Image 1 (cartoon, rainbow, N blue to C red):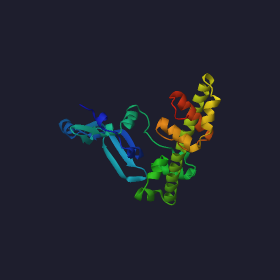
Image 2 (image 1 turned 90 degrees about the vertical axis):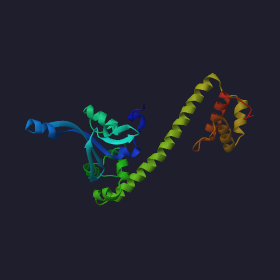
Image 3 (image 1 turned 180 degrees about the horizontal axis):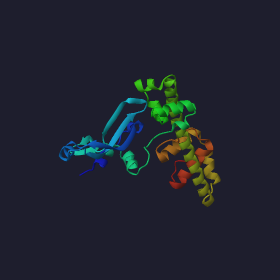
Image 4 (image 1 turned 30 degrees about the vertical axis):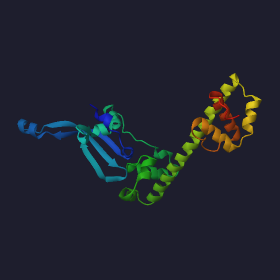
Length: 237
């Protein structure tokens, strides 16, 4: 039978929530009645907040049922298992995303004000809407839009960085291969007579997809040589 952890995958929006587990004391009415004095039980609690919106706070026992998958119950401790694990290890709460300290468009005062509202990351700031956005005060909408733009630009930069990493890895592989089997004049001559589009088509025939970005002709030629060296055929002839 599958466990709750195997059935449940946290939603990506959970990363935007402020989640805290803590100990609390709750009066045990039955035990208090029998003892004739107040008797309290220690209980683990889960507090869930939305960034910049203290009016929407959920307080529930950590092991209360959050949802079910058939007959398998999922508790709040299981839903936020990484936060709960840090709580049990006496570590601080998890804050996922890019810290506000990395936001060049925010002043020190703005960062401090946002943290006071439990907004800790650029992702959380970008997600704010409605009342939560109003709670930031003057300039809140501009800051939120700047956060959205920052994340969009960072996403595009990540693609460029990944492409450059792949090119660098390929160049290193070619350098290693060339030391054992140098390029011949006949082979490189074939590739040099091909257009950039033809080179990309040749690479696609070998890999199933064309190179991303705008690699130089020299890089495309090197890629063609390496691919034909590994899986030789007559395509480049």
